[in-house]
Image 1 (cartoon, rainbow, N blue to C red):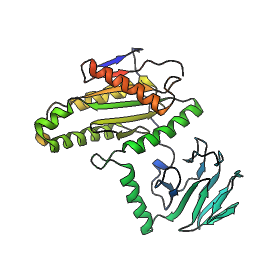
Image 2 (image 1 turned 90 degrees about the vertical axis):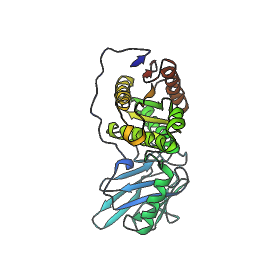
Image 3 (image 1 turned 60 degrees about the vertical axis):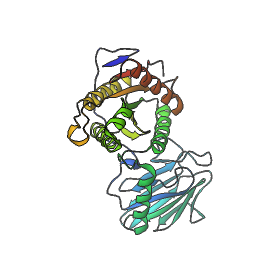
Image 4 (image 1 turned 45 degrees about the vertical axis):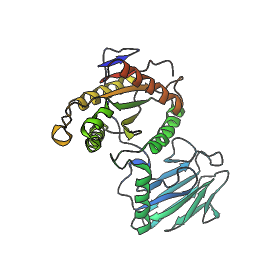
Amino acid sequence: MTSRHNDSSTTQRRTIRPARGFEARSGSAACLVVLQGQRLGQRIDIGEQVVTLGRAPECDFQIMERSVSRQHARIWKEPNGYRIKDLDSTNKTLLNDQPIIEAELKDGDHVSIGGCVLKFMERSSVEARYHDEIYQLATMDPLTGLYNRRHFLELLERELARTASHRRMLSLLIIDLDHFKSINDRYGHPAGDIVLKQVAATLQVLARGEILVARIGGEEFAAMLPEQGVVDASAFAQHLCESIAALDLGEQAGVRNVTVSIGVAGWNAEAATVAELLRAADAELYRAKQAGRNRVCVAEQSGA
């Protein structure tokens, strides 16, 4: 059941294109790891595509510092290695503390862009694999394998900046398991963990393309839907709600009835920041709980 402030009689689902930027790269032979500054520990994979670094939302790796130019530096692969070029930035690009115009990158080099220091590493190195493991620990929820709250909010903030810059659409879902405390009390915490894992697995199966999902609290999950307005987001939420209600975990956890309540909000003039968007989605989640649970409620859209 979906409850809307502004109902629409039809819902169209569109194909979501593959995610852009470093989060989606695979098969890379090298990477950068943030050693100092915002997004500490984050990895930027470098594959066959050119990687642009700068303050602008459209950059492959965005560094949100005033000392960083909108298009600050570019890194690309050549047959014999990798190169970096400064893009006429105001405060220069430093390679091992020396300003450069263009230079070859070697394993272990330090790249400084504003207050951000990144280390270049060949993917095959032991240190690169070590940083991969540290990055996973810092960004993922260990129980479910989804993004954790901190990393999800970082991704949401960056995507909101891109959305505002290009006047695109973005929607947020807050998903809460109904009566989860009673599941823990009646069946035990191991059963509760199984429920959380299965709900997370359902989210992962349904979240195609650019949709990002996370566990942001004990029994609370979130989904970010770039390029989608609340009509498409509410259709996705309803499908998710029905899919979870259809789960039968009797053999695994002794639990046969698992449901969720979902609040949906879209980016607009009244929900333009991360905090405002979270409040709007939380308000709809509360409304779904008050209306009887196992349902979707969607925030009314004003002009963006």
